[in-house]
Amino acid sequence: QFENSYSEPQGNGGETHQTATQQTGVLTTQQGVPVADDQNTLRIGARGPALLEDFHFREKIFHFDHERIPERVVHARGYGANGFFELTKSLSKVTRADLFQREGDRTPAFVRFSTVAGSKGSPDLARDVRGFAVKLYTNEGNWDLVGNNIPVFFIQDAIKFPDIIHAVKPAPDRDFPQAQSAHDNFWDFISLTPESLHMIMWVMSDRALPRSFRFMEGFGVHTFRLINAKGESTFVKFHWKPKLGLQSVMWNEAVKINGADPDFHRRDLWDAIKGENFPEWELGVQLFDQKFADSFEFDVLDATKLIPEEQVPVEPVGRLVLDRTVDNFFAETEQVAFCTQNVVPGIDFSDDPLLQGRNFSYLDTQLKRLGGPNFTHIPVNAPRCPMTHFQQDGHMAMKNPKGRVNYEPNSWGAMGGPREAPDKGFPTFAAEVSETKVRLRPESFADHYSQARLFFLSQTPVEQKHIRDALVFELSKCERPDIRARVVSHLLNIDDSLAARVAEGLRLDLPEPAKAARPTLRLPASD
Ligand code: HEM
Image 1 (cartoon, rainbow, N blue to C red):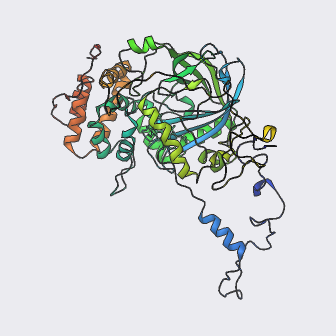
Image 2 (tube, protein in one colour):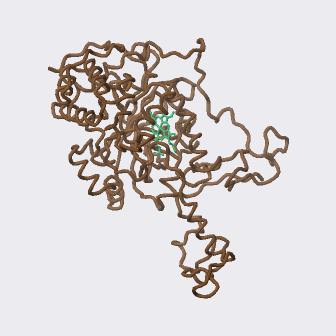
Image 3 (spheres, rainbow, N blue to C red):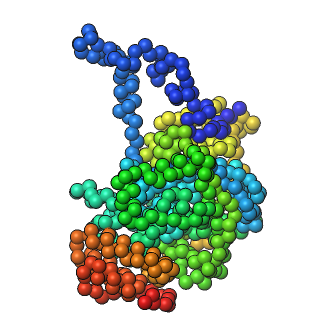
């Protein structure tokens, strides 16, 4: 019989036998040999040279030497917890995804919150975007909704991702500054990439300084598709709304907290869950069809734009509750591997060029970060539903198929292992595509300022002041006056008074407005 289906608990719990803390018996080596003395190496005489034959010492040090794995190339600093998603409103009309069928059904979840730019040991309250990555262990496989706490992104095409990340991380010669935005390279890239200006408004706002993960929204950012049992497609944007509401800290608080307690956010999440104040978010969906997409002022495939909730309301459909801390930080939070391409039947991609690039990037980086192709065998990454396939071997192969058959098609009947299932299997939506092969940004992606302006004007006067102050502070750390002026030239296309006050704060003469594509939406002036 073909037997490689399995379902295991996460972390170090349950079936893992090799965790010293769960046993009180004899200390052993990795080979299971009892250890007599764990205090002294084997030597010739009490003061003599150490012996190569001391296998216990060598095994202990060799294992220690290999404890570190590469930190994530982005989102290195993060904190995870376990919980569940509960459906409160069935979406069966628009999707066949199993987790969205029956109201009251619960799906186990693992969530990792993160900052983007800092290293693994960086402080929690940096001015930065926060990752909000959710893995849902559904009955039909794992669905990862790998989002952020800001609904838009810096760039439109994934080919620019290495550039924005190089620019935001410490400069390669001096390895500083470590802060997200106080940075010549960062502002140089931004000022030459006007599509990032909408995101910049959010990053300079209070959203980039969340009071805690529990007071943060989350967004899937891209347009995805839902596919129903009849094969019909509905576009969707996903939103997580915190039950506690949205709260941030002030910049001067963030600076003090970072100094006094760089673990502020992770401590808050740990304490809340241990104290049974389980953090909770509502899942909301914005659903729309091709007709809306065609009539929308912007392109629904452009990740630098959102769809205003006034135009397409957010419908609540479920809740996410985090009710269990990890057993082991490394086993779960460090080894978890989220990937946008992990979707389940009933959920599909759109042609957003950022999403398409992400679908390639995550698996690729995880092959390196987690040491090969078998990281789905790590409990936090393994599906909780039966998993049967013919993939085998490679480093750390722990779930190779049993028996003789490891190929398909085969004629071994009942002994032949799993078969494809046309009715149950993942149905790729048959979108029609007929275009010329080109490298070209569509005209519908061209307006970089209107939504930046919309966001700025949606803020209260106090929040607008915070954005101005943040821009003055961050740009004052940028040494090159031409870069500062180029940023202000873009601000002039967003809001005159914002640009004027930032220029004044920087003691700059007002430059000419940037000549990149101008705003197309007519919005009221703020002053
Ligand atoms: C990691 C979100 C764009 C490549 C992450 C994580 C999140 C995230 C939340 C952390 C996952 C975790 O906690 O383990 C986003 C969002 C994006 C975006 C919302 C835009 C809407 C991109 C793009 C690329 C990319 C365009 C590349 C083309 C990566 C990589 C990692 C990562 C390589 C590290 C994954 C790992 O080592 O496990 N992203 N990202 N991201 N992202 Fe993105």
